[in-house]
Length: 176
View 1 (cartoon, rainbow, N blue to C red):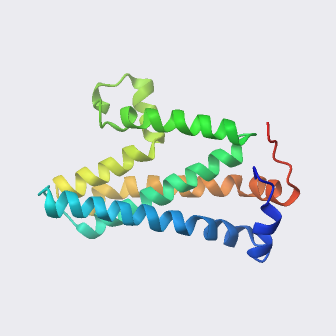
View 2: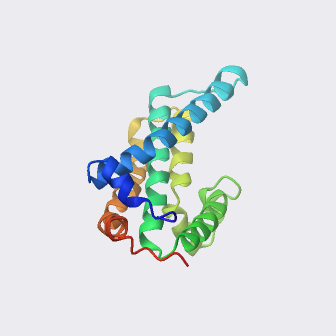
């Protein structure tokens, strides 16, 4: 959008917005999965962190988290009128993510408005999947709501797809 090369990008995807987006995201997804799996290997194999639950569900949660974060980025770019605004909001959102997720401050001690905000942070859901699977060996029923929440973030990006597709086709995305 910034370089105004969306026509060539869509043409390379045969004019299909979905194929174009998937093609754009595949390299990033692979990189993030390799980094995540590498971190898991370091944590669980070499550093000796315990995993009492399912490695498969833990990796599935990682994959859902990566997809949810990519979808959230698409949603922000589709909703906000300029790329600069989308980047600023994304940076603010991610900075608050650690506090709202419960990593640095427990959710049970948060004020009610902040406790409610913590549910719109994908990191919170991933953190709960990690705790359920790695530390508590909880049944899948405990992680399933968080997995569904991460899936919801992916579905939210579908709401902005028509707007983003129009911006790509007509190059009507403001630059300033």
